[in-house]
Image (cartoon, rainbow, N blue to C red; front, side, top):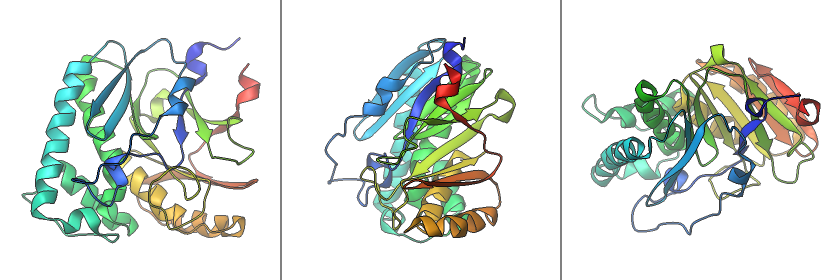
Length: 274
């Protein structure tokens, strides 16, 4: 018999994301998208709570309810990003790396570094960056923290966790999960898709999941690798590119009924966990 912590704590929904990858941060808010995959949450050893600010919508799991602390952190980091974008609109709209000054906010520099490492625009890293910055600020108050931001996850755990994979109409949806060991965390687990959700992707992958110690890098890498996938024949090309990205721990790519993976990625069949 498996414990609840052995079951998927959440589903990494391919391509999910509110303003985090929107081409416009202000004045063009997207309609709220129901986060149906959150109903699959089952880590009952942790307290679950949500933080919503404008288009930002986080689900957080921790040892205790830290909603007020998390709200303050979201306000801080989102506020810093909004103020920077107001002065540097190219940072929001560019699909290629953008240079930033040494005096830029930390979250902006982190996103810019991830963009340069992967060759995409800095907003491709924002969901992961916000998830990690908020999550790390909660760790002094909870030994375990999981922050999900539109399907992109920052995780620091003391127990084995499974993260279920959602890849649209692919037969792998709801059948596979990533296995995360405590010693591998803190960790970022981020997903991009060209067939699911409303996030920008130049590819047609059902799911491209990247794993890194930097959640911002994982987010940007998932986008960059996913951009290369038009058919299942492109999976090997995506993996070769992922291997070239410094700081990336692993990648998993799903297109239709084909799957490829590289690196420190462990996949288990959910049916075997019952």
